[in-house]
Amino acid sequence: MVGADPKFQAIDRAIRSATSAVHRRALPPQWRLFALVALIVPVSFALVEYSKAPEPGMLAANTDNAKSHVAKSQASAGSFEDRFPDTQFADRFPDSGESLPQFQRRVAIPPQEPRPVRTESVRVASLAPALTLPRTDREELTRLVSMKSSAFPYAGTNPRSDEPFLNITRGERKGHRSLGGRVYWQDETYNDSRVLVHVPEAFDVRKPGVIVVFFHGNGATLERDVRDRQLVPQQISDAGVNAVLLAPQMAVNAADSSAGKFWQPGGFKRFIDESAGHLARLYGDPKSAQAFADMPIVIVGYSGGFLPTAWSLEVGGLASRVRGVFLLDAVYGELDKFASWIEKNRTGFFISSYTRYTRRHDVELMQMLRDRGITVTESVDGPLRPGSVVFVETPDGVTHRDYVTQAWTEHPVKDVLLKMAATPALTRIASAPYANR
Image 1: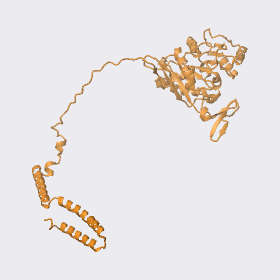
Image 2: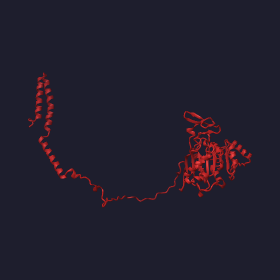
Image 3: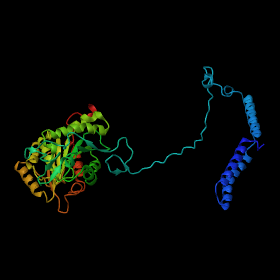
Image 4: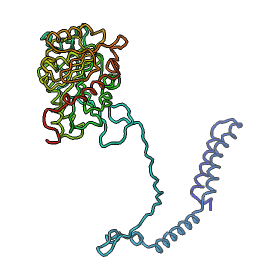
């Protein structure tokens, strides 16, 4: 059968032809044997593979069996349509008389144990120090609030020279040359409109209260110095008096006492008017804005804060509403403005505590007041009454840097507020109480 196969006959012809070609070539006898072997070996591989190939009859039998098996399987299982019929609408959605079966999944829930109540140190506001406080309906709040009427930015004139305050230009930058000759740039020093606003937890707008305005000194920031180092919000809260705090950012971290918008006529009034809405929102009752708009004011000026204090009293537009002025080592000038306010407002109080750095100016201011027939006291131990004018010299061991927390006593702002609260005439609200509005 193999000899009759066409493939075998073709191989046989190829061998004969190759052998004849070898004999025709004039090769040495020793090379003819190698040539014949090189031709016959590949052909032998083909014969071996050919001999292993399945017979055609076997392939046909396997093919027939496979076709028979597939036919039987299709006959027993049916067609594709029989096996995978189309889904009917009723199979997916029940009609009005049917409902989907309800499955209830039970989950084991461990018994709940009561959570322990802890008392821990918490930060009660974005700027407040960490304090341990009991839970109450209100919390002590301290915020930095941007106000249009704050000291800066300021593009007006310097009243000392009637020249533009920003008197230095370098490219697109504008700045101010201070009295000491140093240049401070607007975008770094005179561009912060924020105000530190503090409402103690115990403050009650329905009771007589007071707004404390604190003007910080040179080289200060609200967070680092007024809040954290000088502890002004804490002193007000610790005093326990019904008072709130406003502390505008003056020149940022600079040796400059410029008053900015407080130089302008009515500037202090605009500042207080705008603050009423912010205080009301922070207090949590927008309707209380009018009560804050009527509250008396106490101005506290420290060091370089003397300048905005003096101009606020002179041209601020609220001189009669200011019930007290408290200067902390701050009489560096503007003596006529302080003397004028004291002479015209005999229902308020004036206190100036000083070190040897400002002693000369304080002594001069005392003499000016005595010349005008105004009684001056040089001790703060007595009661604080309407019209009180007090000058307190502190010993050499007291430093100017720590003066807001250590003057003639520890925490002098707190001490003055306590003395003021002991005299109702100094904190009485002029208009009708908030509860009757």
